[in-house]
Image (tube, rainbow, N blue to C red; front, side, top):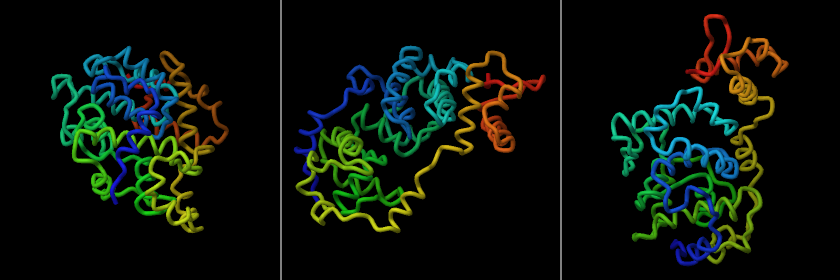
Length: 292
């Protein structure tokens, strides 16, 4: 199938969101920050924190000099705070091995701490304008509906990069097409309620051509199983404990942590998993604090 690139880009020219990291003066470091922050986190929550970070730490060198506790406080409630520490590791490698600059090729990006297949290609495409496939959940959803006719996409696989690469035009428009596909999945071809009437690909969409078939019960069950719940999980308890530690200066007694969750066994498990992950530490007096 041939992607209707002109229609897609015309739609994107009109519908593109004004995200701060899409502005022309954004550095490669700014793009890298945005991509890591946006993993499993809505961009509406990311944007104000990204702006604070880029003003506070405009370069990898500036960020590399920060303390872990400072970084974790600035991360706030974005979730998955290990991403913040991996960014700190990444900045320090950039300073030590790349003269404080973000490298401009996929292999070098993949060698950085905390940078995976998606992030490496996103930075390469969206900042360095390399024509490489950028595949996140939104792009995979668009691809499988448009090309395969399936409402729900299967689990991610390495082959996704090759599938999407075949859609990209072999010219300078490739990176913008990648951004447009991602935007289409986020804004139109959404997970549960796609607005097909406004989709620029509707005339060639395999799912629409097939009559917009609903997923089977087995497909729905598999998709539901892949969705991570939050309420009542150790992840929720970890977040509550991290909130206490972010507010603390020199640390808190365990009694201050005990009040955040009623289940003592789960609370203890969450607390010590934070210590094991390097997100918290216990001093000689038995008090808990953010790492330094």
